[in-house]
Length: 81
Image 1 (cartoon, rainbow, N blue to C red):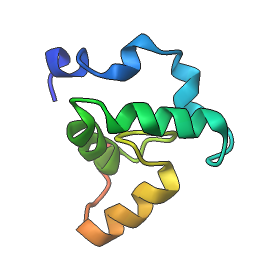
Image 2 (cartoon, rainbow, N blue to C red):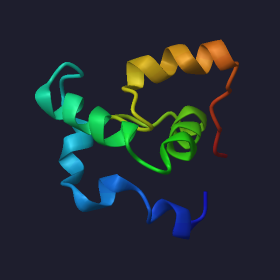
Image 3 (cartoon, rainbow, N blue to C red):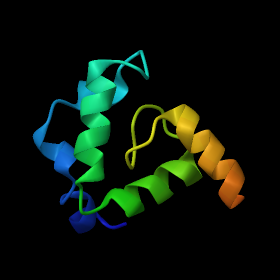
Image 4 (cartoon, rainbow, N blue to C red):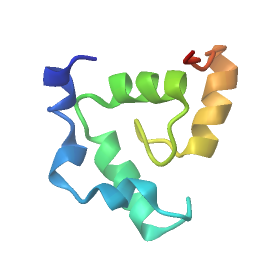
């Protein structure tokens, strides 16, 4: 996704800490997932996070949930260097 697409993310209008709660079962995580599920760039965000192995909630899924999806889709993490 390019910069213009990223700017359409609903996360831009919320505190970024919401997406990085220490507990995947917290109220913040549930709120972040709900916001992601309404987001117009959800799929692109999810694709990015699957490839780059980001922490927190991305594309409406927690890191643990994305690990399962990555395996199911056969996505390989991008390696730098």
